[in-house]
Length: 542
Image (cartoon, rainbow, N blue to C red; front, side):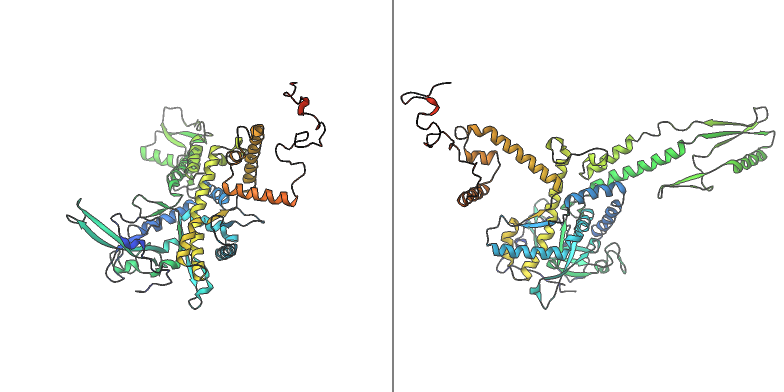
């Protein structure tokens, strides 16, 4: 137990940044548990207040995902993020910002394809992203062959996030006047080690011991680099628990469920017309009159019970319900036995309150409310017909993709280092310039880009008469066509190559080279001055 299970990467000749120390405690987005350095492994680690609660929270997230309204919203998010196309990959490596040889770029793309195969992302991309979105975290064990590390990653095995937790060991040193915790004292923390603890039974309980015993942290100590993990980046108020994107939907979902159950119960209880039975008991004594009334009730009554868990309505005579009729005794001298009817509930078709909480649930999950109503049409690609909610939704999808891409980055790092393609220092230099391009929805993206390009070309045609007088070509390319300097250079080179090769259409001529100009003496009317003018004066005004 004293040795780490797995492997760990280290930079040669570089001191880890965590070892430098700071008075500000390190806050990460992985929900790590901070443990003071010292003592043997087996001393108690406080997992009671964080991991146990976190495990229950993950279970709650998964139950929320089973609700129809929540599941529909999650399905919209996952479908927008992970787009399947027979002709294109779900995600591709973008190396345009890296200045290196094409051979190295080909190697990186080849290894990235291996990473996608290890994740089986072509077939299970939907499930992988869905797990990450619902749980708020994703863990994989990197399996390698110790005898052949240059062979790279052999397998990536999914780990239930309720069974693993990251531990960070720190060395604390007090500086300043006064005792620890006083205003004049400052604690310097230095991170010494980071590792994971895995328990196949999870951290929901402590079999074999109390939470204050050493049995509370039973598990395997795993090296940090042997685990690939990516979180949602959302933390609790105390920065100890990683939250899922579903966390802010807990309250709206509970309110919606309670309101729906209450609406069903109200409609079942108020929809039917109830009757009032006035039973003539004559001059019977009180006890016999009550017995007679009970006999009449047992003979004519029906009792329907609504089960909120299953949504079933069954006949059960063991429970008193609001559907029962009223049985009232009437003494001698009255009008005798009589049956009257109470009207049913009114306005039972109003569902504005339920619709309100449905929209609130969708807003909490960043899904446009318009998608809640199937009859509402949506025309793809037309900017005038795209709502602001759809644009905000696309930005949310972009942020989710960027965060999820950390999974590819972590696996690719280990693959390149294990195969000796790159060192850790070389990877640190280029990792921030690597982009991961996800497949976009073809209809939405293509139509949107086509419309944008059409508007830019129309604007270019409008200012074309003023080119060379008030606007330069460089300005038009940057401000109208929105081209970067690199795109401008590439475009000029391609145009020059096409002109040299003769691929440009003959009708396309440089500006100013028009028929009948002074530079073309063979053109019609070339012997005299242009526009019918004279040699000594300006041309005649028409």
